[in-house]
Picture 1 (cartoon, helix red, strand yellow):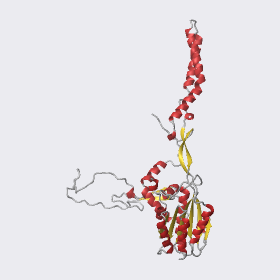
Picture 2 (picture 1 turned 30 degrees about the horizontal axis):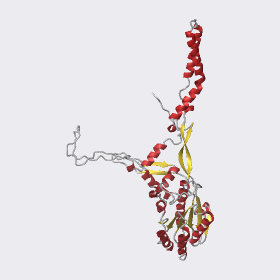
Picture 3 (picture 1 turned 135 degrees about the horizontal axis):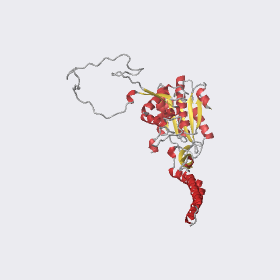
Length: 425
């Protein structure tokens, strides 16, 4: 009986296949839990996985069975206490049945919801599934790097699934020929001598016996060479090959004026952290330009963008003008895919909103692949929103959404950056 020993080096994640099968099966429940979890986390809490709860009602598999249908009166054989038509009371539920917070069943066997944990990578994969930068064009091979897996010859090490049988057997034949060729020549010569001695009319008993012994020893040595050895094994090799792609830059414009209270700023920061994680995880390298503005706009680094306490009045056009200055200075639209994301509470000087409309229509939208605007407020829309509505009507690559509370962040983020399946098809 053959025994197969799995020696694949998969010690750290032995149940990865079962894990992925489980995630595929319960993906809708897991994605719902991930969506709820993003609203409970801190602004920068992205370094851990998440606990997922699947309700017990969703764990059982659907089965085909014969329904009870209709009214049936049945008395089972051996029952000497009841007759047809008797009503039997349900036995009282005993104390101590059921465990924890799960609901106890009528039969006394309770069942809790199924809780399991997913890793940080699995959490982020589910979080940004089916998202992409809209209208991304492949300009030239630089910065953003995509890879595809291609065949790259053979190698001496690999997983059993990649063993090339033909190459391995060719290696086995070559090795056996190399290791036994000299012995086979000796064997051939000895056999020829033996035939000559046997054909001779004189008696050569001693020499024949010695030759036969030597021939047997050589045959044993040749037979002892293994048919196949680990040295012969050849595995199909695969390599990651860079493919032509694009370079892109994302401008993050955040309003930090006095009208933006702490809760509104927290929502804006959550949105930008989601955006940053999505960009850095989906694309190998991408430039992100952070711009904070009140009455004046300023290009800042990541630390200052998220943690600076500077505030003031509101002139939204200052951020748009600074964005254009940076584009003209560092990002040629012929070479770069340019994106913009603006977050504000919509409170802007009345005279400045038409100027924002003019800047977007005449300067930014002609060079921008996609520009998204989110307004974070529970009040009625103001002049900036109404001006941006005119921009959205005239430009298909301009999107605007309204966020009222933290629960709206993730659904709106997915709406803004959802993958265009029609374009892919």
